[in-house]
Length: 228
Ligand SMILES: [Cu+2]
Image 1 (cartoon, rainbow, N blue to C red):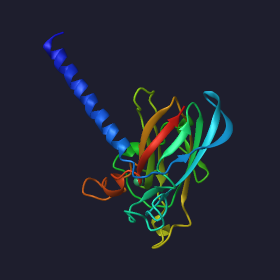
Image 2: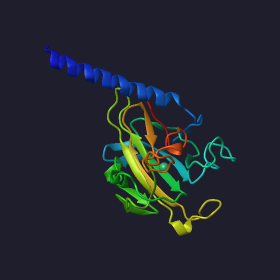
Image 3: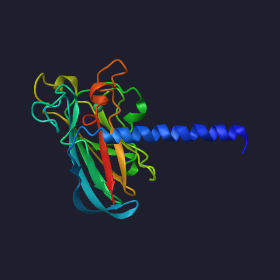
């Protein structure tokens, strides 16, 4: 093996070490000790045949008085949050239907990529009862984005945008009576531990609003476990 290939190989190995290090850190930073397990719902015919079906129903809120943080909002009452949990467990080799009720407003994505539905059956979702494949990148409340690779697993990527509640429908206090409801269905592979997060810049901070709620586990990110 010549020196140049050896050098390149070294870089790859160091790179893999850094990525593995981040994974371990994120997994250890479990601020939300709750877990929401998908509810079994019989079977469903899918492009991959008849599969066990399970459902998950969650919400997104403009502050932390809902969700897993307690009525007073816990450590960061002002943070936007998913709830009732940010840690989910679904069965492997199954079809999962998730419903996300969004009570929050929003604006523009940093990256239009996340305005499109990705990784669901036929690439679509239902928004307030109507089929859609993407929403305007300028009217996004949050996204639910499950990130790709668990160690030793097949690729698994699901990303769905939640339409923002219109500005005029956002009350000064309490939650809107006109949330947007997004339903989407996807197929899980083998067991694995994944991380999900929101890709809409809904946090605070100078780095493109990816601070605060966006950089603290248990609000706009959490664990997504596919259990064998
Ligand atoms: Cu968000």
